Length: 141
Image (cartoon, rainbow, N blue to C red; front, side, top):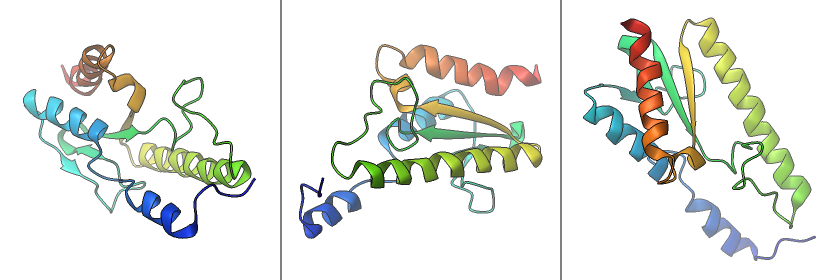
């Protein structure tokens, strides 16, 4: 099935999608900062340019969107009905790149944590963020 938008509209829509400083990422950053954790952002020298880098804890955090990173079993990951093959190929590349980045970071001695966008919905947010904080800090107590 052809694209439902013309080329200019599709280009505009795609240009509005951010890869950094997304709302879910900002939620995680504000929470970690409020707990006294200091971090760096989007370090280009690390594989996969992690969203949050905590050098003191040798830990990185990726905040993944359920659609863009194929969160299996998630109700927010829905395969588009138009240009399905193209989208599946694009998302599969993202998933492969995620896996390769995580493996490379592990080989470099980094602990890698992933927070999914759906886990930051209001009903799950407090539990998710507390669990994330505990995974980062409690290993060092």
